Length: 480
Image 1 (cartoon, rainbow, N blue to C red):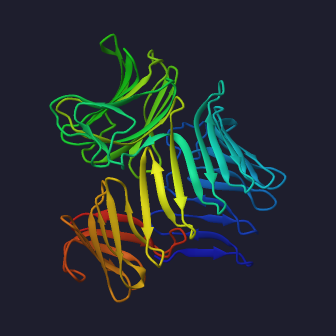
Image 2: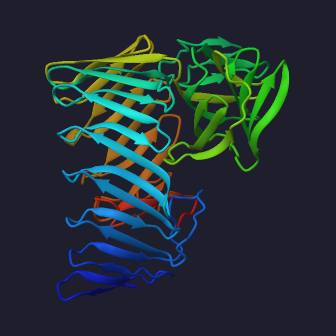
């Protein structure tokens, strides 16, 4: 139904109703600022906090200062987001409060020109930032609250044109170089596919490397294949803390004196589906260990395993293991621990086009055509070539890089992409509306309805700044 909008004589809306199974009332001040909102069934992202006085009316309330900046945001679950500003009207703090108790907070230090120099959260952990004379980010470091010890550090340098020349960061391996450089390995581990995986299931396989500190943060991705189990050993020496993910459960256990020790935490609701990538982040601080996880592409990770009673608090090795008869993959491993670093270096031509990038001993070279379009990229082991058609549109990619291949694109006379053909793989036909929005995809055919519908996009004219930007997609043999 058409929304009903009510306005004051000055044109500022005082209420609007949406008849979609719920009522949304919006109240506005004279400045046109929202001061309240109601909506049964709407969910806020503060899932795990029990509040003293929940707001059962499903009403959002907003407060503002004299110049219209939000100073308070009352959530229906009873929590308040409180915003503070300095004399220059710059935000200096955000606090999430349960009545008068601060549940979470972020405080900001700023330079005279507004660059952020420090962000401190409620438990004292802080990020510190420095800038060069041209106000470009020069360094970022994360410090814990106690010592404070630097647990992650990044540095950046630039050329005279402002192009990034070097980036030094905590050790990161995305295995796109196709090798296991920097790792020790046993069993049948290989990175030829652009990720670390075992090639046979007849014995244990693992990659591992030494670190100099038992505390810090580790991130990685895993995907289970047939019968798979992801098993990661933390602080490994004689003893270790073991993280286990498989279909139907997740566990954090200790391996002590050659056998299984205490189960620190487990959750049968934390499932792992075969052929799905999951991103994991582990934070270790003495006896405290937290494990966060989400499916790849999901922004907000959930706390899935936690302990405050780990007895294994030392150890100098991190291992990514695959047990006998299991098969799975690891990717995007970052060790923000023990001062391990990786350096990325970049070079450019006089047109400021990237000509090479070097990382972990592998150099990738890039070439361009006369119109500035990338014509090729290559390393000592892999290559990719790019072809274009009218209007500068990409026509074909021929690549031997891990995870890539050969794909051809075709377009209609209106310039819209009509089909994608993957060599030895999938065919996709795109259906468009009268404007510039893809509304569905088919797996064959040269026109609407000639193939099997495989995906439908749900669009909204009010989503973000893009007209008719997709807000959802449905994958099935008959999404309609």
